[in-house]
Image 1 (cartoon, rainbow, N blue to C red):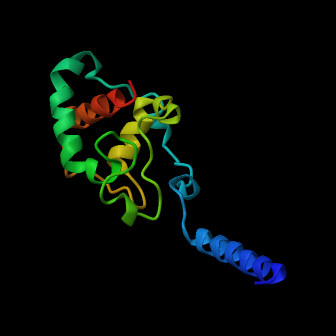
Image 2 (tube, one colour):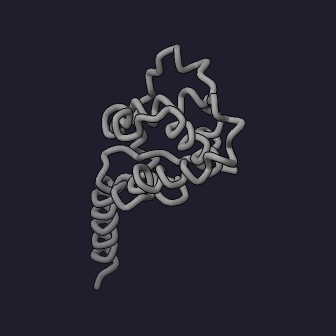
Image 3 (cartoon, rainbow, N blue to C red):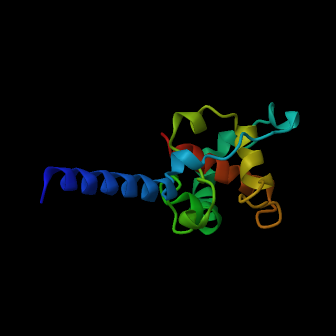
Amino acid sequence: MEKIDRIKIYVIGILALVVIMSFVVSPDQEKSKPWDIPGDYDSMQNPYADEKEDLMDVGKSLYSKHCKSCHGTDGIGDGPKADQLETYPGDFTSDEFRDQKDGHKYYKSFIGRDEMPNYEKKIPSEEDRWAVIIYINTLYN
């Protein structure tokens, strides 16, 4: 094969790879738009923060039941349903997540928006909701 033919095949191969890769989107490329969190949640504190030890098992159990399918066992956004989502579910082990206020985590987790469903009816107890926040806060420790 001539050198020019090999170059053509190489260039066509590279172009095909670029086209294919344009359809494959990594989680970092599909981050959701910023959340608009009401001011009430800015100052919201976990009223059960002193009961972490008592609520850890409850939070882990509820996380396993309601959150793990998208957010994954370790909270890195790799649950079995995550690939079906248009946006990356987020990484609870990241510094970005850790630096959020608990009230913001609460709003995102239970009020939701878009692909993140509202869990107010599925987890009606305030104590149980805060138990989930307590648990997900341990995923980055």
